[in-house]
Length: 151
Image: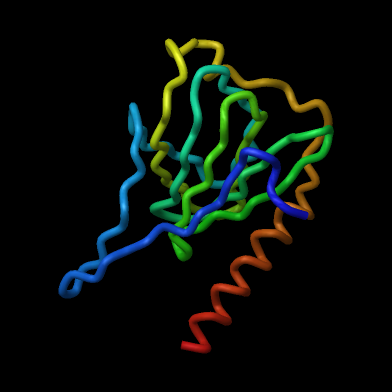
């Protein structure tokens, strides 16, 4: 299954400079550092006036997106630097199965004045499939481990 229309996942480019690696920043109107606490199953959020651009910088979590009465589980990790873009109007939440907090950068694009309702949780219409979410993260972790073994 492909990503929901409008939700994109893009590996970010980097440039090697000596021993450091520099990653291309995302253009934004506002940049936030977000913590998804360890062992968290978060409610849904919908932003009416902003687009989120999320990049995990420490740890991992599963982004949950609700579209057409179906959840999609998108594993994100510091091991694979990529940005997921969530346009306004898309219900989304987070699951952190790990024993440590996950930190991510949200490079927000505003589409009008921020609205306080944009940051209020929305009740889940039906429970997440935690087994499916956990499996998506395990498969991603396994793929990362295999790619490191091949190198």
